[in-house]
Length: 514
Image (cartoon, rainbow, N blue to C red; front, side, top):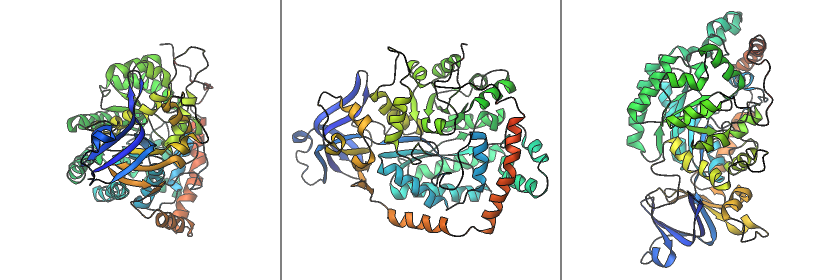
């Protein structure tokens, strides 16, 4: 825990009722890793000459950014997987090479920290094997975040049905035959694990990490998606989370095909079905939400749910554009997630925020649009609440943890920005990671001069390069061969269904009238 003084010519504390809340020519006193006081240097630093000092009048301080929806480090593109619609993209992950959870986590964590993201919800793509393997994998991920100095919410995606498509796994595997069938059965073995076993593991991990790092780790739950989870499994997960006081993050109607399948299966929308199951509530964040109707959004708002908008992901995979303006109009908290990676194939939230702002301008002359302060709030305060740290982070104010990004004002405004330009607009539209001078988590400096200070980043990058440039192992080559044989079957199952027929072209996805 760190005590220090952080000075800034401008402190962007967060969003208030009238827009961005700003303090000028102030400093932040950090005590035991928390913001103890914000005010003029003469008052705050009086008698504190023994404390280390950072920043200066030429710096702008903002809250640490939050990536509320993240899966793993080395991106599919880096691993040779071409972009495709979601349902034909995900199966190809099974042929990707692995570098181990520590290196993989550190890679994306470096990208996040150096671009101002101090907190992440790491949604592990799936645990395989038994509880001993689950614990080793999960601890390796969380230890890596601890090593580099980030706060992390952690959850593991759970699926127990329809993993390969919109049909039962047994019926899908039945048409494969031979070695491909046996390989696929092994790939889907985790779906046979009882949900109760996962809940027992969750409770143990939650207790362990509450003892080890209560302010740096939040254990959450992540039912994968409506079509991937049985109703009984989904209800058990949400009940477990509510009993533990944990958060839940669930992918939902990411693609139009998912929305149509839910309607076909349940006779109502995916959101309506969740409402009937009584799983909608303030502990639940719904990820993506690209294909929701007005009535869906009314239900979400009424139940106090949050949304996580993954703009780059929806565009890169052709999944859709979430109706974020309609969400904001209803008062639904919207967090931001980079998902697998953003439009630059990295985890730079300063880029994602610009995309979100531009994507939701709409075309009317007087329609309500997201302003810069709202976008920043999504990437900070709303994100912290979704990840599970809303009580201690997300804003710069006394009583919150000192998760602070210091921006070089000269680099931000180079060569000139008119003083009449609102500072929050300048930060949103002009901030790039090259202007980030320092990053603090709990008062501890984790980025200096644009580079992480807590690990040897060059050694990490070198080790990753060495591992991925080495020849394929026999198992890696076999997995890649099996995926190549699998994909024609995946594509055929989509072509023969009705879920992709008559899709809606989008500039903004048309909301249903009901």
